[in-house]
Length: 222
Image (cartoon, rainbow, N blue to C red; front, side, top):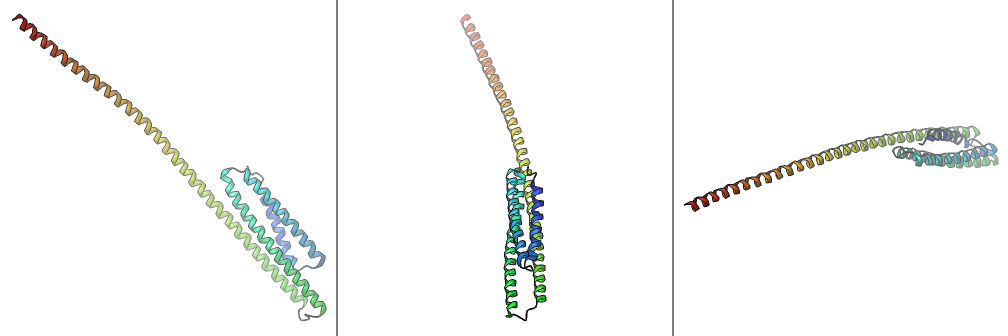
């Protein structure tokens, strides 16, 4: 089950990496080139969402032991995509502000801000964005691994408890069998005791009868 999950995860990693690389350069682009980048990121974002939906379908069809681990990984991917969407919106806004500054420069309102300074600032912004993106990806991967490890430990504990319960049930059945056998032995012994007691009383009664008969015969003859 969930045979397509690794393929979807690989595609998602490729798409999000492409989104990250395009986000990093949006703020430094203008005009038609910037619009093309924005459209590309929008399309890639939709593609990433479709991949997440396919992953969720795969997780639903997975075995119970794998389902929770897959869902945890999917949740970390969803968080990462949402973060990229927020970063994309922020960079679009930065790009818009840069365009406005450029227009003001053309009008002579901010003659003190040079093109070289804008490029350096844009490069710094892009570098910071790339560093934050890398840090978030590393953290998300770390959380996914830790969660998967915890899930594996829980499954191992459940398996051990299930074996313990199974062993206890087996011993209980054996104890019940021993009790049944002991009960049968006790019943047999009780029957034999009653039989022996009956034989004893019958013998005593017979002896008494014989003695009484002997006394009667002796008395009659006398």
